[in-house]
Amino acid sequence: MTYHQHPPAHPGARSRRRAPLRALGLAAVLLLPFATAGCGTGSAADDSGGAKSGGTLVIGATGKLPNPDTVIGGAGFEGKRLVSFQLYEGLTRYDLSRADGPAPITAALATSWKVADDDRTWTFTLRKGVKFHDGTAFDADAVLFNLDRYLNRKSPQYTDALGAAAGEYAGGITTYTKLSDDRVRLVTKEPNGHFPQDLAHVLIASPTAVKKTGSARFSEHPVGTGPFRFVRQQSGEQIELARFDDYWRGAPELDRLVVKALPDAAARTASLRSGAVNWIEYPNPDDIPNLKADGVRVLTNSYDHLWYWILDTTAGPWKDPRVRRAANYAIDREAIAENLLHGTAAPAKQAAPSGTFAHDPANDTYGHDPAKARALLAEAGYANGFSTSVTVPTGGSGNLVPVPIAEAVQRDLAAVGIKVDIRTTDWSTLIAAEAKGKVARDSQAIAQSTTLFQSEALLPLFIGSNSPFWTGHYSNRQVDTLLASAGTTTDRETREAQYTEALKLVTEDAPWLFVVNDRNPRAISPKVRGLVQPQSWFLDLTTVRVER
Image (tube, rainbow, N blue to C red):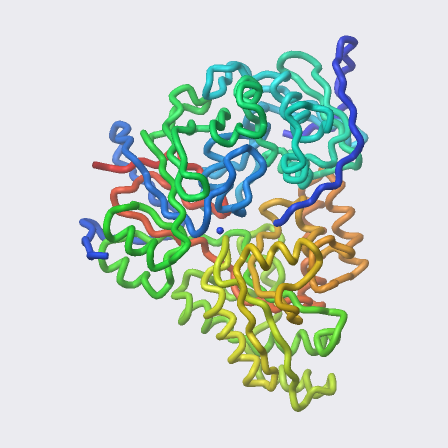
């Protein structure tokens, strides 16, 4: 849907300009057996063809819930998946209707777009007839109002928190202009080939609602155009949404959607068994066999996820790429994926996650080879091994069971002479320090998870030189060149090929310990039907229903 044309001029265009913004942020009982057994990969769809059953879906999330004011969030991509993307939409969205490939970007509040030959000037045709939850009409003025709120420091609705959060995805926009009620022109500072993807994260709120409450209190009464409308919340702990009957894609099946913060894995399992929730995110892998035996359906699918250790590539033994490669050969990923995580993850043998377009099986490099690891260590002058340390979060969005995984890696490294001191901290402390370019508890490595391609805009922050975040000081000018070229081209095939080549170089440099790729497990009651489990962090909940 991207066309290389110059947009037509409009003599009455209204334009707003601002200085480029660089604001970055980083960056989670009694047993009541179920009636029907089942588990699967990809889809829990029901082909019965019956009428909408509606019902209430209650989800147990792994961490605190986000601030529901559009882009602010604060609970990682899990909060965006379960709350933000249910309340709001951007001009584009992820197509989450299939389970057999990475989710592409498709039309949302815009129906089409084209980019001029300069690869900077984009014209979006807006969807007509869309209403916000409060009945306000969506149009070009609503787009400009929201961009002002995010980017224009003179706007009465602008806040530093909004500006910082929006900067990751909208920070490159230099001008935004209304061409007509249903057309807007956005100009970026630099060519940006993934701009349509970025705009899926630039969420649009009702101008009427924002003006009514002001930005300071909008999170108490959030209003968007998404499939579900706000009902009530207990800040950070529980939020209740209701079906939006006038949703432009058609009203969702569900009557109600309730999301609860249940950071303790045992509490999530207990809540599922008791019936307090009918869906939990990331069940404890040790609980999965019993849950399946009790009729719970456990869905998985590959997607863009990597659980890894970031190594300090500028100091001590980790400075030597032979040492970093040796450590990667020491890890028994298959044992971690199968024995510890019970198949809810796959071995990560390269930097590119297995569920992404950048993954090429030919680049799989690191199998379990302790002899090769010892040989590389000896070659690097560490035949007797060495001691190091790693900071590990105790939980958090996408981090699986971080301490047990880190302990498994610790044992594998010890077997080749690398002694690791594990230092634990909470997720918020870890990422807050990382965002300042530091390592919590002053370790030589950080264990964490991330998605690399769920948002291409963030990729340079992980593998590019001079990242404002602590990334182990990794730097490879060839990688930088490939990232810069890929980021500016609007040709997707070229962009994907360059990303694949960049991740191949990262695999060879081994600035990380590549451990596992999560398969996004969620455990659901057999009464929950209609879910497609996509190859994505995100979900389309409009097709889900709960049978009575």
